[in-house]
Length: 263
Image 1 (cartoon, one colour):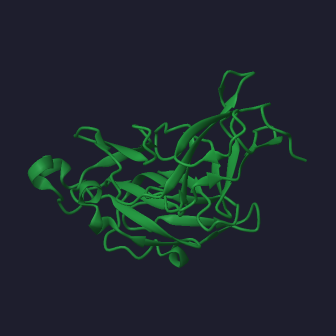
Image 2: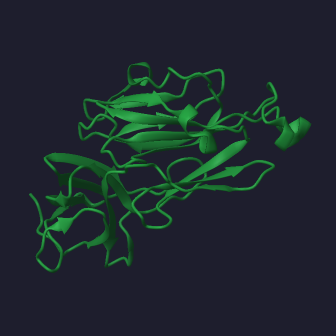
Image 3: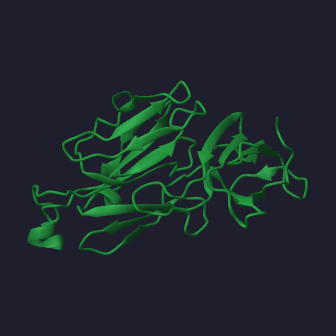
């Protein structure tokens, strides 16, 4: 049901995570070589979880801005199971309710389940469906919105302690007067690089923040921003209009035609 995309191991290739039914295992498809995918779920630690669920919305992003992608998944059965959160959901919908899951990225494509440490998001069961990821208050921390069956939509504000530095990039196509959906944005900072794909249509029946969000860890300055536009051309941006280096902890817009073309 849910599909999300991200470079989980830092090799510059996008990997794909797909959710499945409760009796199955969600799957991380690792890309490599380019255009070929293999099942990397077990090696990533994503099969090691105390509870499975029927996954719907899913999103790979860096919630604590440490430079490593994390993973959030919301769950809800499509057939009757053991009741969960019956006091809130009642005798019928509680049989379809499941708890959400949250994994923290460790680097090199590995994750560990930290659901137990986030009771607000993953504690109580619900029949969850949509998962929207967006920096709603522009503080650099990605927030989550979850839609549910027989219940309200819920907003989860990012209050992760000790978040690292960050950068939010909006890629703009001035001739079309819209965001450059389908572009790939690469940011280099602190001797590292990260790549994001501009596609708000990830997760499940949702539209997400159209900006590319980067957790930078300890890096305070951006060395360069490269945009691979949907037609295959590439531009690089080294500084702001003022000529000064791009500082971290900012939301910026880069417009096509404003940077030097790359070969």
